[in-house]
Image (tube, rainbow, N blue to C red; front, top):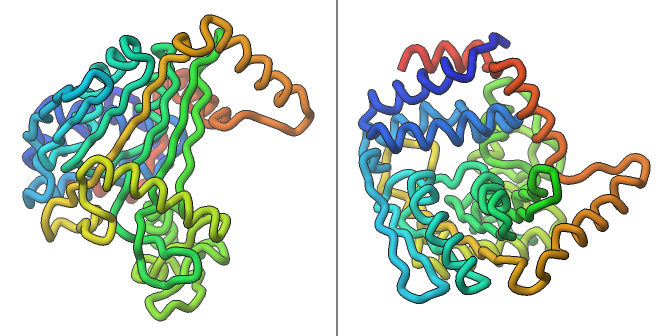
Length: 331
C-alpha cells in the first residue's frame, strides 16, 4: 500500500470534505478523527469513511455547516444538539463542558442528540482520561445487528468505550463493538473479496453466511450470544433513549446519501476519581495493571493501537490502499 504523509493525508481529506459542503472547522475536526483512526490501525473508521461523509454532506443528509448547541440544564448534566451535523464537532464543544462539570460535581453526564457517526468511541473517552477523568461512552448506529435468537436488525453495532488515566503512561482505553464485526469491516471484506468469520452474520433469509455482501443485506450477530445482545440493548438505551436521539430501527443508513438525517445519539458518563478515591486512584490502577502484565502472554487493551500510533508518528505517514487513494483523489 502506498504511504502518504500525515500532513498530506489531513490536507487531502479536509479538501475533499470542504469541496462537498463541509465548513472548515467541521472538516478539520472530522478528518483529525479519521486520521487518528488510520494511525491506530483502525481503517474501518478511517479514510474509507470520507466518500460516504462527502456524499452525505453534498446531499444534505448531514449538515456540514452545523454549529452544535451546548446547554447545561443542571449542574451535572450537559446536553449537545448536534443539529444533524458531524459528531466530532459536537464532541469538541461538549466534552470540555462535561469535564468541567465532572470536576465540579464529581460526576457528569454528557448527552448528544441529532448526531451522526461517532467514529472511534475510544477517542473521546481517552481525551477525557488525559485530563485525569474516568469516562464511559455509549453510541448507537443504524440497525444492523439482530438480537440473540432473532433475525431482524434491531441495534447498530453500538460501541461501548471506557478510559481511565494511568501513571506515567497513556490512558487505558477499552473500546468494544457489540457485533462480532463492525459494519465497516464487512464493507472492507466485500471490497477485498474476502470472507467474513463464521458465526458473524446471517443473510436476509436468516441463514448463516460468510459472504460480506449477503451479510450487509442481512444482519450481523452479537458477540457472546445473549451477553452481547444484552449489552447492545443497554447501549441503545443509554445512547438513544436517554439522549432523545433516534433509535437504531428509526435511523437511516450511514453508507448511503439518500434518506433523512440519521439523528443518532451518544452519551458519556464522566467521573472525577479524586472525588471518591483521592490521589491513590492511579496507584491502585497501576497495581492492578502490573499484576496483569507480569503474567506471560498478557497485554492490556489498546496496547496494539498505542504501538501503531507511535509508529505512524515516527514515520510521519500512514498507508492507504491504492484503490482508496485513487478514489479520494477523484473526489
